[in-house]
Amino acid sequence: MKQVRFEAEHGALWDSIGAIVDGTDGSRRTELPALYRRLCQTLALAEQRGYSPTLVAWLRQLVHRCHRLLYGSAAERPGTLLGWLRVDLPRRVRAEWRLLLLVLLAFWGTGLLVGLLVWDEPARAFLFRAPAQLDRMERMYQPGPMRLGRGDEGDVLMFGHYVWNNISIGFRTFAGGFFGGVPALASLVYNGIELGVVGAWLTMNDATRIPFWSFVITHASVEITGLLLSALAGIRLGLALIAPGRLSRRDALQAMASHMFPVVAGAALFTLLAAFIEAFFSAHAAIPAGVKFGVGAACWLAVLLYFAFAGRKGG
Image (tube, rainbow, N blue to C red; front, side, top):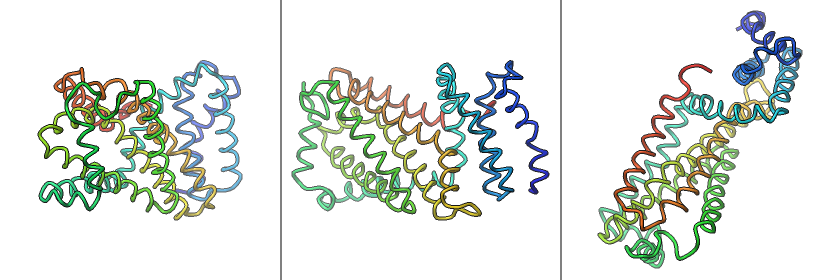
């Protein structure tokens, strides 16, 4: 698309945002978060297509003024975050469906393959885990009064541990995307192997089958989602560095970081929620396994419906 047509197509949007930012059209202030998202998209398009530096600089200045107006008011911040979760996050993920398929295959495909191999021949588990580690896992998920998946540490202490563990895994996966995506994919494969080996090993044991799966089913719905989102965002930023198009690598990274920020924020929120569920719900043996399976199934269904249908209307 030529620049003249591009300006004619989006000129009304820029004028509306300029009027709001200048204070001449205060009645539309509540529309600013949605307009701001569209403005960022036009800036990314202008940079990607190599339009004139004057237009790009003007759009960047408008984005900066709009951003300052949004984040300078504390009252707007919850609405902006809600907009990211309600519209931007699911839309960004669906738009990256090809990359999402790769991420899903790297994690779930590896986990299923390794799990079937161990199920077919249990001795293969020792190729991935030491016998002492597997024995420890079996003791950890034996039925009894001890809380599942832990010793006798308190809920708050374990919540902090889960936050640190989950976020560190997610951050390493995200950061691995900057090296062409290979380390991020390797992290997904590694975690898939862990799930496959441990899941198959504990499922073969009648004593640990129900305790293990009732423990992981609920918080895994958001913990694994956070991991996959971290990999998705990291790989996409890494690809922007490898193939920046007409932009410099710095500008390409900046544009893609702005575009993928809702995904990064979503990954962090999902990871934090997983730690809360794991500490205060999943680990409690007093909660019947049937209840955990029911809540876990509802959480998995909610996650799938959210990414399939959220943000399809409005915004």
